[in-house]
Length: 300
Ligand SMILES: NC(=O)c1ccc[n+]([C@@H]2O[C@H](COP(=O)([O-])OP(=O)(O)OC[C@H]3O[C@@H](n4cnc5c(N)ncnc54)[C@H](OP(=O)(O)O)[C@@H]3O)[C@@H](O)[C@H]2O)c1
Image 1 (cartoon, rainbow, N blue to C red):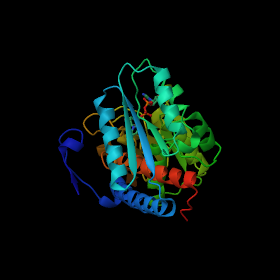
Image 2: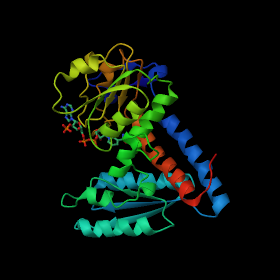
Image 3: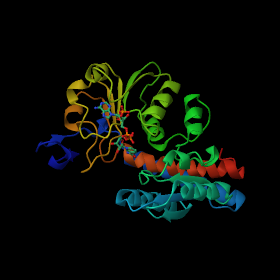
Image 4: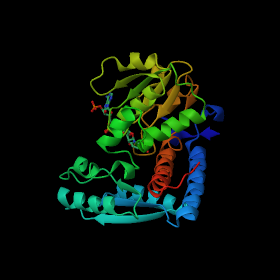
C-alpha cells in the first residue's frame, strides 16, 4: 500500500507495511455483519425491528452528514431509524421534551442526540434524559459511572470501538502502560476507564499536563484524542508502541503525525480508515444489543 503526499505532511511518499496498520474499515464491516445477524434474530424472535432514533438540532453540515451516515448504516443492517430534526433556535426544554418522548416510546430502542448542539442549549440536560438502557451512544453520566465501575453499559462508541481494534490486533493490555491524551466525557475519560478495566496502567493527559512528550515516550499504548492536527510527534513514540489516533481534523488529518509515528510504532491506526469506521459500527451494534435486551431476545 502506498500513501501519497495528501496523507503525509510535506510531499513525502512512504511505503507502508500493511501489517502495521490497524484496519478499522475491515473490522467495522465484520461488526456490521454481526449486527445484521443480530437484527435478523431479534426480528424472527419478536417480530420487532430494532430502531435507532437520531436527534439533530440546527443546521451544522458536518453533524447532518454524520447523522445521515449513521442512518445509512442502520438501513444496511436492516435496522429502522427515526430522524428528528429540530431548528437552530430550539430551547433546552424543547430538546429535553423530545428526548423524553423517545425515552418513553417502546418502539425506540436506542437514542442518539447528535452533538455539538447550538451553544445556548444545555446538551448535558438533554443527554441525562436518555435512559441508560437506550443510551447506545454512551453519553449519560449514569453510563460513564457504570463504565468506570466495570458494570454493564453501552460505552461511548469511539473508545469502545478502539477497545475492539486493540482486541482484534491482540494488543496485550494487562500490565501495559497506556497514555491517553484528552479527557473529554465521550472519549478520553471512558477510554481511560475501559483500559483500566482491562488491567492497563493509565495516565490521562490534557491541556494542563506538564512534560507530555516524556510521558508519551514511555507508553506501550498511546491514544490521541485531542482535536489538534498532527499534535503527537513521531519522536515521542517509543519503539514498538501501539499508536491509536482518534483525532479527526479538517482534510482527513489525525491528531498524530502519522509519517513520524509510523516507523517506531508496531501498530498504528490510519486516518481515515482507523478509528472512525469503528465508531459508527459500534453505535449500530450497541443498538442491536439494546433492542435484544429490551425485547428479551437472547443473542447467545
Ligand atoms: N473518530 C471518531 O469517530 C471521533 C469521534 C469523536 C471525536 N473524534 C475526534 O477526537 C478528537 C478529540 O475529540 P473530543 O470530542 O474528545 O475533543 P474535546 O472535547 O475538544 O477534548 C479535547 C481534549 O484534548 C485536550 N487537549 C487540548 N489541547 C491539548 C494539549 N495541547 N495538550 C494535551 N491535551 C490537550 C483537552 O484538554 P482540556 O480538557 O484540558 O481542555 C481535552 O481534554 C477530535 O479530533 C475529534 O474530531 C473522533
